[in-house]
Every structure is written in C-alpha cells, then in structure tokens.
Amino acid sequence: MEQPVLLFGWFRWDILVEYKDLFWQGAWMTLRMTVVCVLLGASWGLCLALARLAHPRHAPWTWVARFFLRWPATVYVSFFRGTPLFVQILLIHFAVMPVFIHPTSGILIDGELARTLKQEHGALISGVVALTLNSAAYISEVFRAGIQSISRGQFDAGRSLGFSPAQVMRYVVLPQAFRRMLPPLGNNAIALLKDTSLVSAIGLAELAYAARTVAGAYARYWEPYLAISVIYWVMTLILTTLLRRLEHRLARSDRG
Image 1 (cartoon, helix red, strand yellow):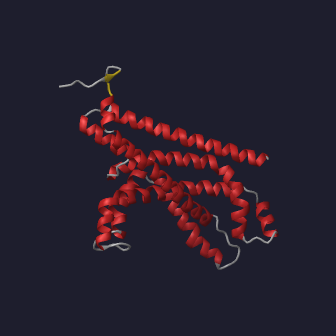
Image 2 (cartoon, helix red, strand yellow):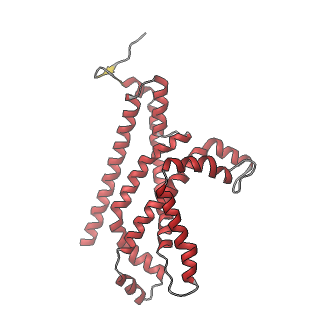
Image 3 (tube, rainbow, N blue to C red):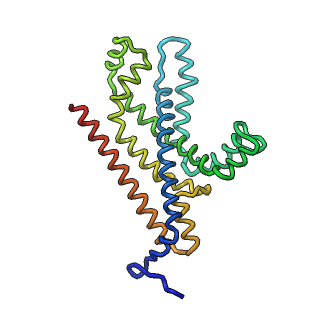
C-alpha cells in the first residue's frame, strides 16, 4: 500500500487534493450566500432604520409611526441582536420555514414545489433568510447612526429646494451618510462572510460543511480545518482590500 506524502512530517496534502472540488464548491457557496445576504440585509436594514427614525409631527401619524413603525422595528432589532445567530438559524429552519413552505400546509408554497424546494434547497433558503434577518438588525443600527450624524441643516436645505422628505433622504442625506457608514458596513460584511459557517449545522454544503465531511472521512482535523481557515482568511483579506480602495476613492472624490 502506497504511503501518503507528508508535508513537514505531519500534514497530508493528498487529502486536500482528493477533496479539492468539495472545497471549491463550498467556497463558491459561501461567496454567493455572502453577496446575497449583504444586499438583502442592507435593503431590509435601511427599511428598519427609516422605521425607527420615523417621527411625524402631526396626529394621527405620530401614533401610527410609534406603534406600527418605531416599536416593531425596535423589538425586531433587539431580538435579533440579543439572541445567538446559531439559535436563529435552527429556529428558522426547523420551525419558521415549515410554516411557509410545506408540502401539505405551507402558507406561501405547498404541494410538489414545496417538497422539491425543501429537499433540494431547504438549507440554502433557511440560511439566507436567517443571515439576512440577523444582519439587517446590525446594519439598521449603522444606517440609523449614519443618518443621525448628518446635521439637521441638510434636511432643511433640501426641503427649501422643494424636495420631498423622501427625495431629501435619497439625494441629500444618504449619499453623505454612506461615506461615514462604509467602514462599519464593511465590518458587517466581513462578519457575515464568516457567519455563513454556522449554516453547515443544517446541512448546507459550504466551507465548514466540506471540512467536516473530510474530517469525518479520514478522522484527521488539521488538514481540512486549517485549509478552510486559510480560505476564509484570503476571502476576508480580498474583501478588506476592496473596501479600503472604495473608501480611498470616495475620499478623493470629496477632496476633488
């Protein structure tokens, strides 16, 4: 029987070579989940931030905003920031999603389509939903702080030009706030990239799942877990570099 080649006297490179396709597929799944969850989380997070900042001056809209916008958004953010992401993933996958997608009793999707989605994409759907809802809670706080950092004079100046409140927010406030929000938004994106590893607990074939599969096949742990650590590290370095370049470009545009 041919003996495996050991690097440094202990590292079995042949294990990683044998399962290289599984690692590549896991890395690709991780990247896709990160991009989708960042985009969806940012969109929902902005909605949550605007809901928490809603303060109409005239009744009855003052009470409507308080009970139907600010308070629900505050409870939502408190819940998702105050409970573990791992628990949220399990709750959504095993309790929440079957209510909406179920072959016999799904509120949104039932029948054969629900059965197909559950069998082939159930873990992916649950993972995207859980990570999106969780990241939106943190991103909403970034948006809220960024919007509040813009002086009231900017709002008044936009209104004096004839802009509606929505137009002032879109064309005046958010572009200025985005420059200040970019570093914390980047930190959230990096954290989300690493948090995708938790979705392996419900069977999604991403990087952590690939490492666990290889470790179970060979009963060796250095090779697979060190490999995905390096892959996560490289991806976070690339993302950090891209964010830094974007920050520098925005800074140059401000100076120009």
